[in-house]
Amino acid sequence: MKFSRLDYCQYLLSSQSNYMITNLADHQEEYSHDQINRYLKADKLTPRLLWQNVKPTIVSDQAKLMYVLFDDTVLDKSYSRKIEMSQKQYSGNAHGIVRGIGVVNCVYVNIKTNEFWIIDYRIYDPLRDGKSKLDHVSDMLAGLVNHKKLTFQTVLTDSW
Image (cartoon, rainbow, N blue to C red; front, side, top):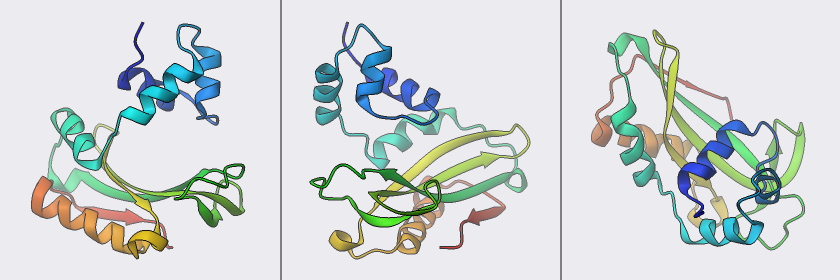
């Protein structure tokens, strides 16, 4: 059986705390760690590809019932010193500084139906791209208005 993007996405959605592929392989006997690792090295889920896959599923009622939410997260890589995007940063989950990869997510929320869609993301890597989290939010917000043409009433974000 061949491992797919759907298999991986379902694992990410269902896992509450452990996103490591070793954990996935331990719980899916038909897939080995090496098989999953080879798949993930070859597959790239870019923000554009994410949008293409999510766009047809969005249920937009009225602009006044739609919110845009920007949130950041840190993928903990405390034991991975050689991952080039990994850096020391604050993690709310760990309540302190950890080595990890920062991700800024853009979520589209339908308040009436209580549905949400991750519609964009950016990797927070200021040493390589020179952008702050707010720069990424600004880029995603501009894309939301100018290219995705989604309507919304409110923008919510953390105070970074």
